[in-house]
Figure 1 (spheres, helix red, strand yellow):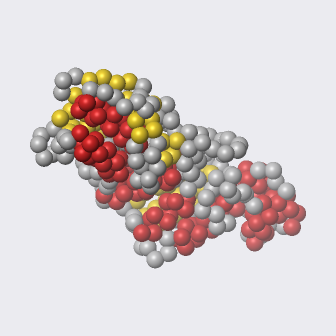
Figure 2 (cartoon, one colour; figure 1 turned 90 degrees about the vertical axis):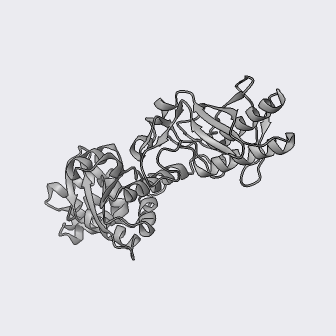
Figure 3 (cartoon, helix red, strand yellow; figure 1 turned 180 degrees about the vertical axis):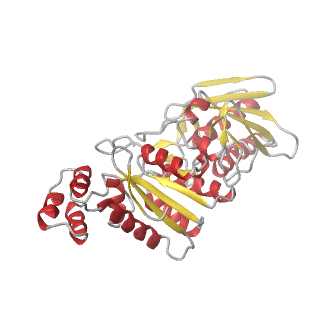
Length: 362
């Protein structure tokens, strides 16, 4: 994740909010011949932002408008993406129906908020767009029966940088957002993707999934377990975000894989493993080593280590199986977090070179 800037952060707008504004502008132009620019919309919490158009056009039977997404100070892959909406008249009584244009994905797996074969336009953006269409229809005495086609410039390439391919969304990005607002560094989108990954695995009937802290641990864990891509959950630092969701949406078996430093933080009871929100506690680690038989001098060296890798090296040189104990304690924390759910949890611990140095009964 990108480093968080100092000072007050600027909020941004979701793809769903941008698509809503573009749809409202396009439908207004289809009915009146004129594009409102800027165009104002109403978000679910009552906010009324305005959006400038970057492209517009119309024919006798359709109109389109496009908006450049501003994600504020959030490191969003869709920041500055062009969200375009084409509006055409639909069959009488159809209401607003949705299609995926270039750069917007199509759902191919069960377990997502919209069905298989549907464009990857989530329910809240659909509701927002529908409300904007109804607002315009009421203002100009129209039916509101329209076909809404949403496109994203370069969306297929951008989607490769997201979880969409793993979730079974092919061909482009998703149109997302529950509030219309992007809160910088809230991590809400990441945690939401973890939840959707669990949902897709449950719908596929998977009995085992793996959540890993990074690319190295993910690659090694997937190879070890022989899991398909969709069973690999991009947990990152959000062990709590995954485990708490699993507590109410269980899967038979969950494996957590990660580097020694990250897993040691989980072993101590931290559910957010980000370096800005939890730290490796070398005093605690030295106490663990001492319990495993380390002498006072070795424990003091571990306590004084500059990095977790150094602490692990000291333990290894002195035949102290610290990584194995870290794996066991992390397993205990994870099991406690999902208490009440029938989930078998195991932990894999890797060193900086990607070597498996600690494991529970995987």
